[in-house]
Length: 145
Image 1 (tube, rainbow, N blue to C red):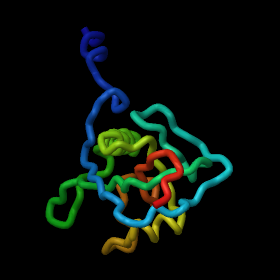
Image 2: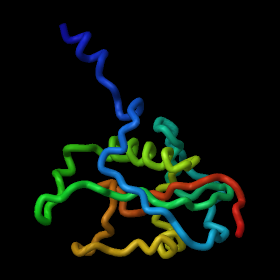
Image 3: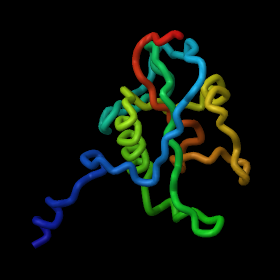
Image 4: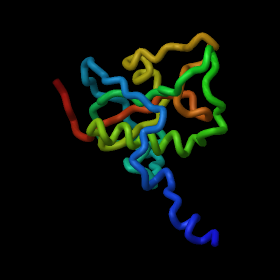
């Protein structure tokens, strides 16, 4: 009896849900963004997710942010959605905006360009509970203007 119920469940990887994510478009100079010689890449989502700076040139489209509703000054409990679900939703959000990949970074150059400011509690207001950097939607190529 449980088999039909379990086989009908969708995982975060197969949905198009954007959950409680928002997208802030980057409107600024496309500089030679920082790169690394290598990085780890998570490939089980709608887009590849770079866990650090990629090695090839890219253009910044914007960044995915938390758009979770608040009740008073409180957000919903973080245990309702895992970081894995939140990241899958972020990938769907960025893919809809034309991104080729997501970049999880706390690189100072990108933080300054994105004007990532601290929230009232002294921590950066981020989508993922276990990551204090920004989630950047990127497009591949050397896009210099």
